[in-house]
Image (cartoon, rainbow, N blue to C red; front, side):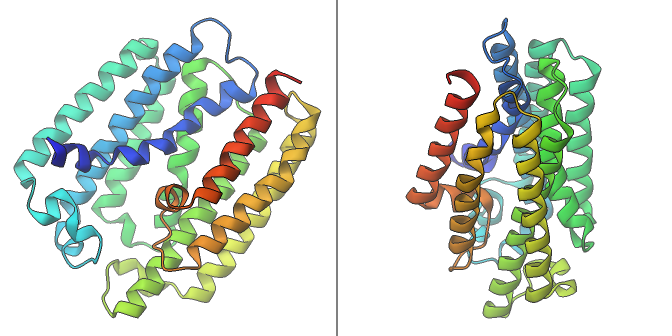
Length: 286
């Protein structure tokens, strides 16, 4: 059982907190039973994401066995057989749809988001991960789809500037992951991803800089003129500090995975928690 839980990668469910952003920044957290619906939606999306991880591990099993960290994953290490993983993936898919039905009765908008996420990531695992630029775009799109999914369940129209902010910061983190994979691949002399041959460290660095700067510009504009609280602009220095600390961490011996980076550093966790506290105060108290 432990192997199947590991296969689901529940630590990565933290990404699905983005589902709550539209209703949170709309000031509608305490209206009706919206949080109950979003929690069920969170479970639906999390199980769908775990389904994608299982599919990806099945497709990448041979390459994972040559990777210094991924070789310990349940399928690559032989703890879970491929036929058993396929059955488990089907179960995850059925449970995901069940939770979505309980969340909003399978309204088309939320289901379209979930299906789009599933299709994009299956296409990614099936070959698009080897296409430069497209691979990064698909990685970033997953974060945007999470926000749109949450908006559909809560019947909230998200700000376009919020969407653009999430998009740019997602690109920044996705590019950081590719950059560090490229560096590790070069250091170890092994090709863990075919797409890495199309990139260089300097190219990915420039892409990261552009994405980070645009993300900060969009976030500043969103805080200054779109959000319900005029005090939100004062969170900008903290967001800059979070990005600086994040950049500092991924410059070390790291593969640059956003969740691994966040959970590995207590100072970064403290900065993120401080940010959450401030926006709660600005949006709902002050």
